[in-house]
Length: 281
Image 1 (cartoon, rainbow, N blue to C red):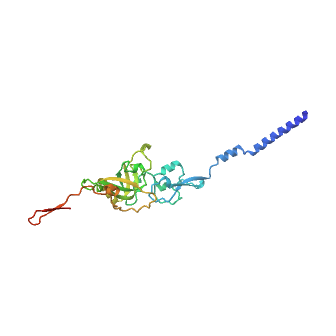
Image 2 (image 1 turned 45 degrees about the vertical axis):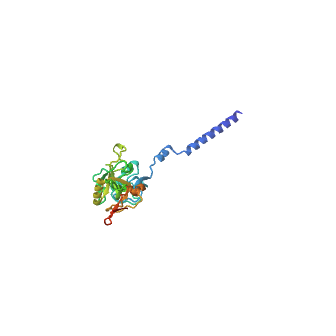
Image 3 (image 1 turned 135 degrees about the vertical axis):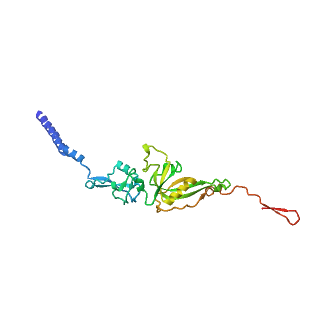
């Protein structure tokens, strides 16, 4: 009996030992596991153009893409795709045009604050003109550098004798002009101290003729900005003449009719020596 118990005990002990050896042999060495975990990726994400970008454009977040390239091909002039790099590129100006997927390098961009940045942003022959806005006329802070806008002038006629429908009118002074800066901000969201502030000035890219027109318009009445869709094809730089006038009577049907009382016109006719006769019309 004792021998039988010893036999089964030895068999159980052998099975446990065999299982332990099998489990240990199936695990990789600790050094190899640590080496595998520490092995660097063979590729790196770098910044590219997400779409076609024209020379002189101010970069937006949607302009920036990313692609994986072999680590060995990443040179000193390649910008890695990191949150910090993307923040630094927001609002930067590209010195040349890019096709979709093309690498963007540090030498290809100029950052706000660099010497001559504003002059470099302007297209050849263009000027930077600043107009005053408020929270309403400036589209409630929704306009950013790089947007394209129309400039609308609204006037109130001082002549109280004019019909009500002809006392207030609006005209589009300029169309499809590019916003260069909001106040002193050349980068979207770059408020001093990081606080939100209401814009007081907007700097537009205009030519000499447009600059003269806007200077006159600022003395005539109130200027408003209308943001254009990004899908609208941009017009080539050049003079934009005044467009059609929209009167108050065109907007409000109640002002479309002259409510003043018509004067009573009459004529006196003297047929010879007889009494005169009066005719009303």
